[in-house]
Length: 258
Image (cartoon, rainbow, N blue to C red; front, side, top):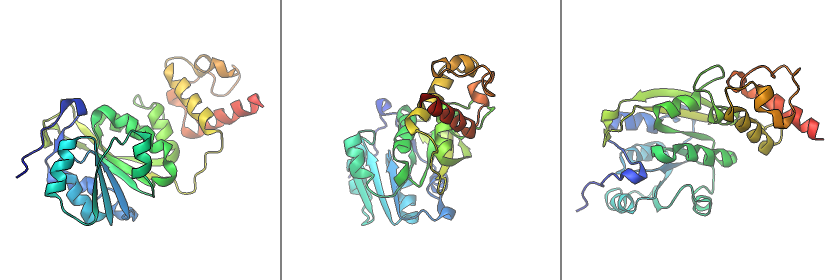
């Protein structure tokens, strides 16, 4: 008989134990008709996995923890479930896991949650929707709009490609062990038909450079791009620019390079 999985601090594991919250996360995209395939990252003991199996035709549960994988293989028997021992952040393993359009969802380990977002951004074409549980301040940052103190690099990059919504706040006591911070749930739906009208690598570089010196005006923060002091954005700071503004800036720098 398999007993409970021991949460491992070095893996950032906090196992959700509240069934109602698990149901809400599993149903994030219920009304958006994404029900073919879900990839769950960090299933732990499978409370979310059970609800995902009610919502999706196929579920792939990916965990780097061998103990969790062994536990799920013995406690969750379902023909629509595939349990994979793998590191989602490893590009070679990711290619095998993310091989068709899939919703990415989970109670994400806090210590790798932002890295998971970047992996989603690298695979936009086959990730029509993305959402789940983050540390609250990270969830707020991901959903932030220009003008907010929490608005940053990930806010811009994620909201370039996805419509992002902060859904609910989750208290620490619904986890084992309880984290020291609150959690937040977000949902992201890819913008239909959106194509970035500028060079992607340059766009990412402009956004990252602008926020790396966020206290400076863009004239100073983006000095390596030779932003003119007469430019409409020159006296503004990074957090004041919308996604559309960053696209405009990147297109300007493209033209300058030509």
